[in-house]
Length: 352
Image 1 (cartoon, helix red, strand yellow):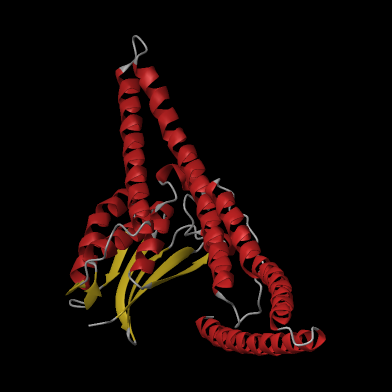
Image 2 (cartoon, rainbow, N blue to C red):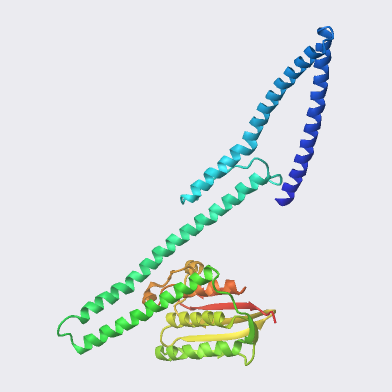
């Protein structure tokens, strides 16, 4: 687009110079012809011939000015007015604008480029507005549920003569619900910071084996509670150049997700290995798996394919994982069969 604009500028300058030179030449010829004709017709009276010539030139000047004004209105004023109206529309929150360019692709002038970038900006703002509205609606819906639970069980604790067993059960539910709400808010804040680029990766070379092992050991207690077998294949020393804290968000969420969807007697396998110039971490479970349709949407915010486990999560963990991986320049793949478990594979470029 820039090359086309520069080329058009050069052509425009050349044409302007040619038009100016040609117009000057034509006016000069007309002036001489008119003057000479009037001079001959008025018995060689110089002043009358000069007056007639001046009047003709004034008329031609007025006509030229009118033609120029029509050209300027079409090429400059009308497109500028379209841009002003589009900006006014956007300022009022309406991002559905359509602006026509005056020239073909490759020959855009500055006004054409302004229109194109303005439409691109409007399109992005429209998408962001939709995402914001959907996000607010989803957050409101997700927060309403735990708040309703907290309200209900708080009221039950205020009932006179409540039994110790009922009190203990209510307190457990309140504690669990508050924890879930805390995790949800924490994930929302992390997602918001990531999406607004408020988190800058701190890149260092560190031992990925050690970091992954620590995250796995922290999750091992929950696996023991559910009776899930843990199988690890992590070499002693695999170095990686990345952000340790952000990567641990990925490992913790993938392990938590595997525990959530794996029932008692199941198995979770964590592997770390190299594949060409990539470092790969896989988390495999023998849980309920997912359908192909769910696999396509699994990284969407608040999406939960298996509603039977809804009370154990909020649909933000894998969205957070995907956003972190994108920020670090990695890749994530999911292999899953409904009823047979899932495997999440994260690959990072070995940039050491």
